[in-house]
Length: 289
Ligand code: G1P
Figure 1: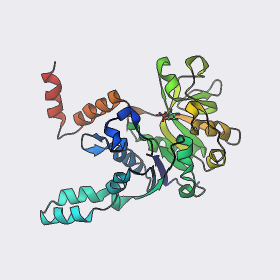
Figure 2: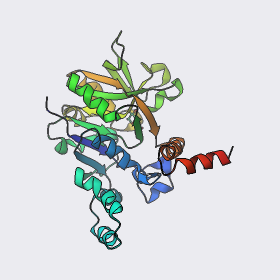
Figure 3: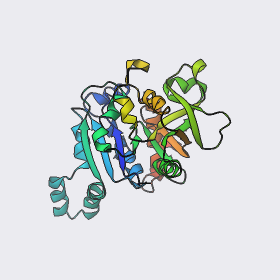
Figure 4: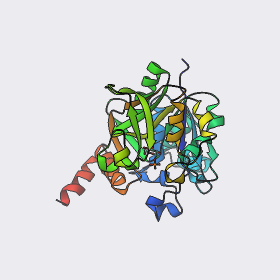
């Protein structure tokens, strides 16, 4: 089986939950401490062995391109000041991975955004990482866990988390085949943002996928679904008639950066996890007790 080397990151939404910040700035550039959210996501995939990235943007989000490219003016400035650590820092990603960009001109839904990656995938399976979900894997990065499951199955795999009843209507929800247990489960169906009474389980799609290229056959003619959007989940359901699709419970902590609470939690936890900031963050928290 050919190794998966490609990842797709959709970043073309308007980010309305984070207005007014997102009026001029992409929500993907929201910093968790001093690193833009999208860099954590790229690093998760890079640390899992992915080398080719496609980021789907819209007009006005060109600063994401700037972030992942070389910046010769800044590099010259840092060289003159002998700031070698900083030079290494800004050049690390451009030297290790290839990041390309494409535009989604109409915001018609996640399925429509993923279709923009058809040429990039070029008939190969790929990882899809959604920008709102940042993971800290317990032992391995979330993407690595999915890639290992792909090596076992050769099928599309949806990374999942258990959500409370109150949240099922916010996610794509998986229906496992009867009597399947364990972390890697064969699925019977998926449904996007069901009402609680219609939800087949509490197993939610958590913003990480491995998709086989057959998904594009369905995305190309996908009709609108939940929220009147072209939904990826609806195409995955149709894909299940042709190929097996699995879910894998992701072992790790997820931060929903799309929600303000999740963003704040990530800021606190990521500071506490950093040697240079842990004491400062503890002091801030303790002073407020
Ligand atoms: C998207 C997907 C949904 C998934 C969720 C995870 O929804 O459509 O299936 O569960 O991401 O974050 P969104 O949050 O973009 O509405």
